[in-house]
Image 1 (tube, one colour):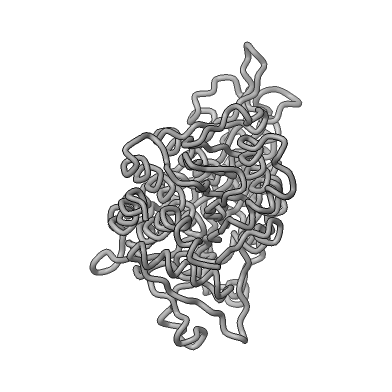
Image 2 (cartoon, rainbow, N blue to C red):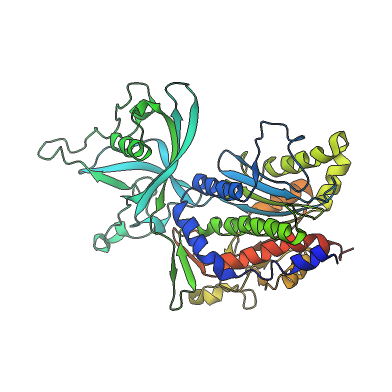
Length: 487
């Protein structure tokens, strides 16, 4: 073992999980949409010396050994990587792949609804399993991205917006109304949020008003003329926009405005929205930052001295199948690895060298898993019931992959838990299998546990974000050495 390996062997083990609790609370509270999350991570990476790349450029002359890079796709997916100073094309890539999208409810393209009984409402549509019963009677804000046209240049740019006070609410029906108040509410007719009042029609025969349909702001034919006037004014006011017609389009969603917070007698829980899967995404990026910094410190220089590439991929659209350009079932990850290979091998980076790269690589498919629920012990297997604040949980997987991660956990002073679904239950999918199948990269399903998955507000352990950072950083630090232990 080299002196560099000796020093780095203690780096991940020395990570204090509690140091990441408050940063995670801040991140999850302040970045409610996938666009905000990617923007946050981009700024984090830039502040730690990572260079932003563009897919539209050639990378051959931009990548250097010892360099740190990232780029995003669609503003909703992100890949970051460091290149070891001893890297050669054909060497492996240590990858942590997660998804950054979360269940949500998105505003419809033309979202104004007819005012009913004085209530102003907005049309929303569920994204994946969002807009379920847990969304009823919650304080909802509105956020996302807005496309703006510059009056002088005519260029269109993208800006983020967040109206983080309670704007919308989906009111429940009191149980006094009997059968109508029972069961799953119809998502099209019963789960329409109220956002304001308009009682101008009181005393008139016509109760249903049409004023909320079209704002007519910005002039006929503009995007904003199809949107509710009060929402247009709120968005414009928050962004300092004077000319409403400069708003070319937007992608907005409603989100739970309640901040993430600590809970429990000893503050051992985190109660938050969007844990699935901002949690593993956060831990993965923080691990890459920690690993790159420890490598620089241990090497006494400015770069990672390893012979591999360390990579984090955060993919959008996992909750709806991943088959979009920013999803895992696209060329997002493979094209990144191919471009790195080409940058250091030139025209020699063909099928043989790429296949060698994939065969030497390993991927942690990091997605949240089910923590044991004490009120439903009968639906779990007794010895496959992950607990909070203990560590990463691996799924039933390839024995070799489990053994590799177990060795990494030992070197990182981390514990692994195991989850297996009952034979009479079903489980969900994630990004790892599709990426592994496309490339042939070895992979393992390993994520942090949480309660109340797919609820608008879920629970994880207060140490779990940091426990994820600890093991993931250990993976980046030790994979290269551990891989040599296996024939």
